[in-house]
Amino acid sequence: MFMCGDVEIGHIVTNELQINNGTDNAVELAEKEHSDLITGKYEGGLKIWECTYDLIEYLEENNICLENKKVVDLGCGSGILGIYAFQKHASVTFQDYNKEIIEHVTIPNVILNIEDEENRKNEIQKCQFYSGDWQSFNEILAENEKYDIILTSETIYNLSNYDKLVNFFNQRLTNDGTVYIAAKTYYFGVGGGMRQFEQALTNSGKFKFEIVWNTTSGIQREIMKITRL
Image 1 (tube, one colour):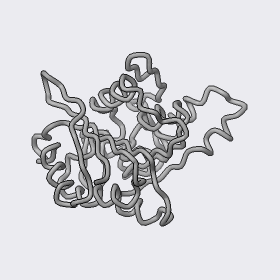
Image 2 (tube, rainbow, N blue to C red):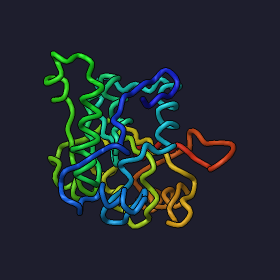
Image 3 (cartoon, one colour):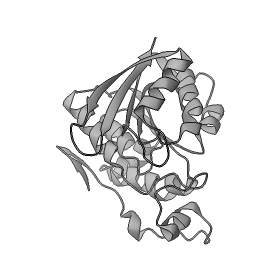
Image 4 (cartoon, rainbow, N blue to C red):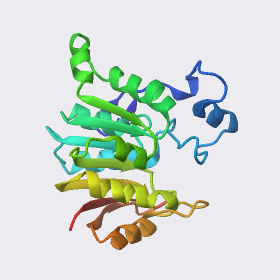
């Protein structure tokens, strides 16, 4: 169980995950190399990252309304943020870089958390699932597809992906929508972090942002709230 305050979300045990899909898939490669990130192949979807807890706690404590909202969980991995939104009666789209993660982790986790088995088929139809990077995801969506709330956790470690992410926000956030990003202040060894992403947002000239939460000790983590100018 993922447990954060009163929030309890069931999920499969990923270190016992077996995927009979050949030996060259991203999940097996990550397990074999004992790595959380393999650039261009695997983007950390097997791990529930620390900032996911931060964002769930923030949404809970601040009573952020998700009911009847269109929500997208970008870089969803296990899908914890999206499942939380789904439990709050949002319509949710789940996106992850890796197809294997969507098929063998995200979708099973969503199904696991639909308690009404008789109505499970109808409930799951409120969700959509996509794999691929943010640019391809953006391109495949219908032109008028917009989201009220965009949630994403630990996805700004790679500077080379910032333009894709900011462009997604610009094209897919409703006029009065909100983005919540939970991330570490700085990602040592890869160069990304909150200050660098703030600069990317400033350069776009499209958004205003504020840090609405941050840690006071240990590895520095923050939550950023983004809206349109």
